[in-house]
Each structure stands twice: as C-alpha cells, then as structure tokens.
Length: 400
Image 1 (cartoon, one colour):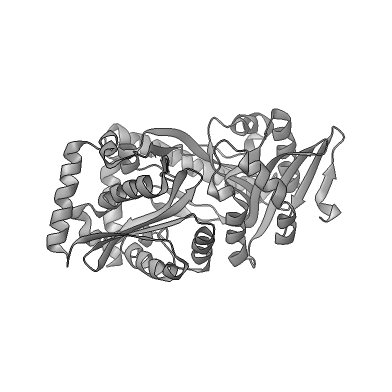
Image 2 (cartoon, rainbow, N blue to C red):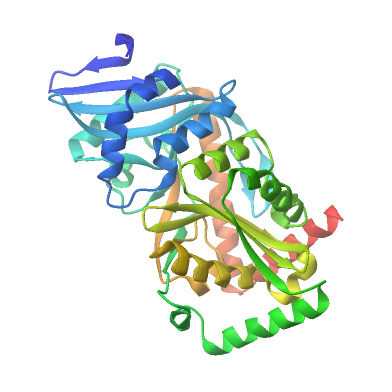
C-alpha cells in the first residue's frame, strides 16, 4: 500500500487508509477476519458488497477505509466511502433545502473489530484531521445504535457546533423466524391468519388466477425481477418520493453480487399472471436482511404486502433455515406488529470546523428540532398516522 496512506502514532497505533479499489483488495485478509469475528455481522460491511457499491459509481465515489493496527495487530476498521451528500432538510415529507457537501459516509455496520476506548479516540482523531484538512465537509454514520460507545464519545470529544443535533431516533426491528408453519402463531394470531387467507381467496377471485409465490435466485432471472420490481415500485408513494426500487447499474451490481455470493432472495407475489408485490434481501449467515419491498396499490384492499411477508417467513424457515428476519432500516407500523425485538438507532453527522459546513449544521439542526416539535404535538393528538396516510395518498394520486 502507498506509504502516504500510513501513519504511525507514538503510542503503538498505526493508521492505514485505503483510497482506491486496489488498496481495498490489499486489506481483504484483515477485513474478512475482522468481519468474521463480529458478533452481529451485516452484509453492508462485507467487502464484496462494499466493492459492488463502489464499482458502478467510480466516477463520483471512492473508498475510504480506515484500518487501525496496534503493535502490528489489526484491531479495528471503519468502512466508508467519499461521495457527494445532499442533506434533506425537511419537515415531514416536505423538503425545504438540499445543501450539497463532500462527505465521508461510514456504512451501516461499518465499524468492525475491537473498538476499545483508545481505538475510538484514535479513529475520531483521524476523522477530525480529515475534516480539518478539507478532505471532506462532513462525516456521516448511517443509523448508529444509540448504545454504541462511539455515540457517547462523540458527545464529549466533538465541538458542539460541529456535531449534529435533534436527530430522529428510529427503532430497528427483527423477529425470530418460526421453525415451522405452526410457529407463525407466535408472530401473527390465528384470527389474523384467517383474515389473510380470506384476502388470498378474494385476491384469486378478483385477479386473473391463483396466487403464486416465486423466489428468484438465478443470474438469468435478475433482469426479470428488476423489471417487475421497478414496475410495482412506480405505483407506490416511495416511488413518487424517489425512494423506490430503481433499475439502475448500482441495483444490478448489488443484485449480481448477492447472487454470486449465494445471498440473493428476490420474491414476487402474483395474482394469476400479474405481479402484485415484491421484496428482495440477503441471507447472510443465519439471518435474512430485507433490503427493499413494495406492492401495487391497486391491490391494497387485499393486503398483498402482508401475504408476501408471511410467504417469505415460511420460505426462509423451510428452505434456508434462517433464524432471524431483519426488517432493515427505519421504523414502520407493520414492523412493530410483526417484530419481536428492537433497538433505537440514529444517524450522526460530524461537520468540518469551517463556515459553510457549520452553517449547514446549524440550519439542518434547527429544522430537525422544529420537525421533532411538530411531530410530538401531532402524536399527542394522535394525528401522526392520519397525516402520513393523507400525504402518501396525495403523492400517489399526483403520480396518476
């Protein structure tokens, strides 16, 4: 590795930074060792998944991996990429500003290894230098657990003006996969199961044939799945907001890497020959990580999303021996209903000590504080879900 990317500290620590794919590959043995030793490894922090994100975006994104070594031993790693970041300064679904900054994004689950207090201090000092040297304007941590040690250290080690405030806490949900179809009673009641079966019968009557459940896992099936998921996603409010499934080179790279690694599970629910819902995710270790899903709103009355969800539970249990279903980032009513365990997460931002980044931080934090205040008022009057449904309905109607 280029010696310019190595820094020796007087207390036995060494910092190695990889800034291109060749340098990333040179870290593969250490990276894979640290990832394998993680108690709760996630696919986002896997080296092959990371490369599959970087490769289609090389014109605008580069790696930035920070390896911490102590007395010659690889102790910990921060997995990130340098890219243009647009902060969404918004209230509810309404975006007020989208200022652009050059950012170092630490991926979800991207702090791997033994992050002792000393290692965390070394990492934060390296991040502080990157900000001070004008390498980046902001460092972001994607949905950091609130009980993570770095969350507390940042509060004491970073200047008040250079760290974000009023971030929205969101629960991250998981559920235990039943080992048999009878075990579904633990997740969903008998009455709800009967309601779902009634929805299936009604869907079959209204649709063009029997309800079918298909799992796509082959390389030659990726394009078909992308076409189906893109078509369904276009009808959703997420698609209207630009958050739906996008059939671009990045998505293809992610799906192809997952398929080659044997992780890919891409599901579609059909009413006869018509696809009505989709979901894809990764089987990683003994867990399934949901990545994106959607259903055609024309079939909303028949609960296609819930039908597909239960079909996926059964498939993962019987075919993949998966123990845990991870619902992915963000909170939602259906996750609360089906989930069995959760923990709070929050995005964190560290801004460079310069006028423009500090101004953006103050602006963004002020808007977030206002948004949280409004949200609490709405919650006190039990209006939050009603307004969300109204807003989503409006977005969907505008699309049509």
